[in-house]
Length: 493
Image (cartoon, rainbow, N blue to C red; front, side, top):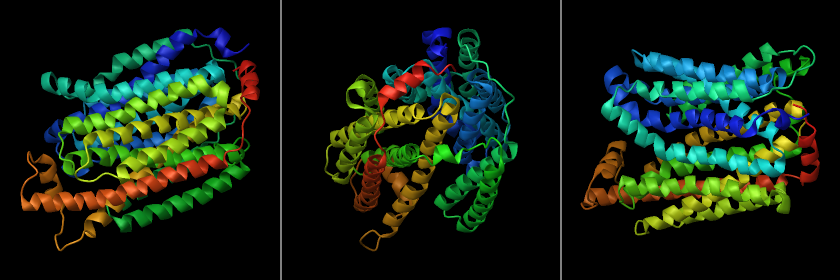
């Protein structure tokens, strides 16, 4: 009997949405509170590490927890992830210094690395492919709503209460989610004694951690330390490959990651993550600094991506049986470059609605491509490998985000350093431009044109990455949804 007949699906999905809302809110609500936090705790030079530390452990642990959910079941791993996340949240509220805050954010990231892949895998266990896209659309809506509510809730908390409640807000949400999984999710029995590849997990975590640190330091132009961390990454990767080839049950199955549909879909997902980072990072800067619109308008332009994503996911849900996974993935991947083209065509005199339209189209394409690739990957593996396969897709997106942050930061710096004219543009001048109430003045005009020039180059690179998404999707072979449905109906997980 499948899990869908044993579990109360609507209530389990409510628990899934609550757990994912907890992680999604954390991504936006902390950014709102950070100015006040750093004012109280000090350590301004460590500001960015409050965010990087969370992403570091989340990315590194995603694959590990995906594998653990295959070995020990979804429920215990999900409950462990929620517990770790809540412990990190409670401790973060009591942080007495910026280094302590970073350590507690690392703990939160470990919990998030369990919650996301296992939540997606639970959905795959409960719903056949024809129904799953609709549920994935609900989950995408959670992220969209959280992106809008996060800053608002954060502002209200900062205004009326201590910033610690930014983190403690997770406790009731997490407890409610844990109760939902405990009571309503029926996990299947695992037969046989699991063989846990601890050396592989440690080496994989160390390798990805070193890579993330190297990319972060490279983005900050600290090349000497980045090269040292890259050397650690290479050494750990070599040891990891050696360990996985000799392990009885490897942490990462090369047969899964190297399978052509999974490899191509994950490659496209890496590029999606990169394009998403370029859009979310630099669209608000362009709208405020070059088009000289208010932060509210800039936020609305970016929010259009959050509207397009769940819309694309919902469209995918209704079209899976009609068009097929590969065709939908190709269609969504083809829309993304069209959206990116809007940004290439932007000029200082363009209306802000043009940026909003580009954001909407890119979000629509990303929603279609991401959900299609995730369902495709989940359907072509055995049910006992579904957690690892799902985690590989989420890991690819997180890795793409980090690669995108590094690449686009370097491109922006290159553009600013090679602007036409003898004027050298500094970060302080850009900040003054973003803070200015009027676009007048020769100095502001020169900075505005220089920012347009550098961001135009950035948007060109984003367009090329969007084209790479389509090229990667074209490599994905056809996948039969009919076979996938049969697998889902007899998975027994």
